[in-house]
Image 1: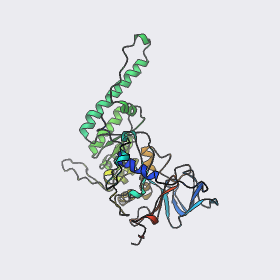
Image 2 (image 1 turned 90 degrees about the vertical axis):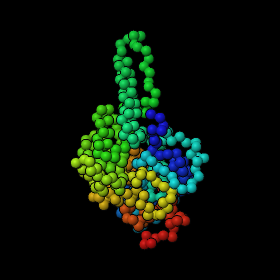
Image 3 (image 1 turned 135 degrees about the vertical axis):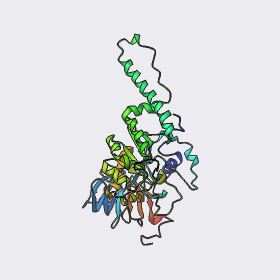
Image 4 (image 1 turned 45 degrees about the vertical axis):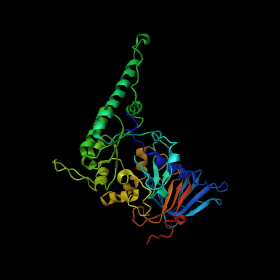
Amino acid sequence: MDKKQMNCVAPVPYLALALFLMLMVSPLSADRPVAAIKGGDLYTITSGIIRNGTILIKDGKISRIGQNIEVPKNARVIDARGKVVMPGLVAATAEVGVSGSANINKIADSLDPFDYNVSLTTYGDLDNMLLREPVAENVSLSRSLWMRKTNFLQNLRKARDYLQKLDADKGAPDKAKRPQEIKKPSGVDAYIRLLRRQLPARLSGTTAADILGTLELVDEFGIRIIIEDAIEGWIVAEEIAKRNVSVIITPRQKRRPNEDISGPSGSTLENAAILKKAGVKFAVVPPDASFTTWGVAGRDLMALPMEAAFAVSGGLDEQTALEAITITAAEIIGVADRVGSLQVGKDADIIILDGHPFHHKTFVELTLINGKILYDKKKSIYFSHITPDD
């Protein structure tokens, strides 16, 4: 498979822009080694809500969290009274795009998108977008069913045959009598890693038939997969759960029922709730799995929290909806050891809100990455004058 058929989790321009934003962040001064977020309602995600809590941050990590924590005298204190404090949101997305006039091509030219697999910590618009460093590669394959059934399957079988020959060669009793050296087919390195379960394949499966076809790969090859665009996942939720396969969904994504089949088909806002009931692990992403720079509106419905809120309107409980854009998303893409929840030892990637995460009038007050303030609403030329009642 060539690079045209394999898509990185994030194209170069967005990587470059996020890296540029990170370079613009000034570290805490040497005489203030500790920062404290004090007095807010801490949505830890994994350990409930801590009312009137405090978070201590040191060396870019969460060092303490809880109530009645003594704040060091030299700490930089962020007053979060009356606010919601939660981990940065994680977009488990394969396509992050940039729209607008940002001139970042020069930076982008120096980056190779095929070297990266990233997750994004975000809340809503571009000003609050943070980049996590690369983690283990995923393989994002063509969304064409024909391509998946030909190129992908052929390469996977080539890789399997190669590994089987290697295993047989290792068992040969006399090295001198072995046949000529086994040659590795070109372009199968990623497939070998798939077969060794060192990385998951991200495959699109929109319809129930597509999803079942994708699950056959698990049955035949035993590989790990993540199914994207699982609009009809609700129809085959039990089958997905049996294989312990994770999915990525957009609750508002729509598909008309297929009148040519007798069984259930099409989209439903209850997709997330049904997947949860079946025991399927899923993450929520925005429509078209993309973020844009043109949505400067602070209540942008393309944002992750609003998408998760639609899942709640379809019957999903709020806790699972929050997890789908934080810890569960981080688990699916392999960065849960660092982000996705407010826990001691994790990166201090934190957002402070002026209201409930799913309320349509909520704004971001502060965004931090590694304990450093990246976004401050009070300093925003777009949002500083806006109040929740506007």
